[in-house]
Amino acid sequence: MTNHEEVKVKVAMPEVLGLFVVAYIAAMVGFVMLDFGADPGALGMIAGFLPYAALLFAIVTVACYLNENMFGTALFGVLALFFYGFVPVYAAIAATSMQDFALYVLFGAVFLLVMAVVSTAQPVKMVTAIIALAGVTFLALGAGVWMETTDLEWVVGIFGILTAIVSFYLPVAILFNTMKGENKLPIM
Image 1: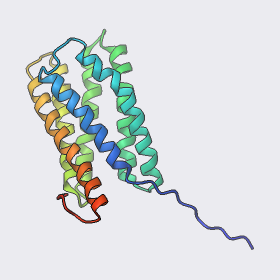
Image 2: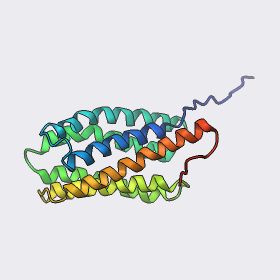
Image 3: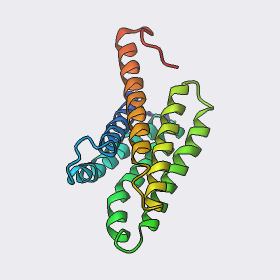
């Protein structure tokens, strides 16, 4: 008789890496939209980073899958696809219709807002805040592109910076509390 034991691979909290990547993207978007680094190449900096962000999100997705974290797998998996496609979609359709590109961004915003609602079922409400802030950031970005106006750039910038702050604090608090072995920094 053979022994069929289940072998599981456990990886250490991949969501922390995913949240750091969210913070990095949100900070770049926020600062660029608030005219920090107003060099015309500043948007190129963001576009150049997005494929690497997509790769990191894909790694987080696989790790979440291995940890049997369905929410993390869904969230970071779709973010990996969204950011991997961001630059090619822009390059393919921006010349013909900015509204088509705006729809791409707005679909991402809707996904994030739906995931924010889904995340209310888990105990750490700060995750809900991060996803909702990111959703509002992309909603304002998509609306600004759709209306072909720069009037919403400051909204995108403010929400991007808020998203960056909250999504940077949470993984730092998780790491700190884990290393201390007790809850020193609040995680709401």
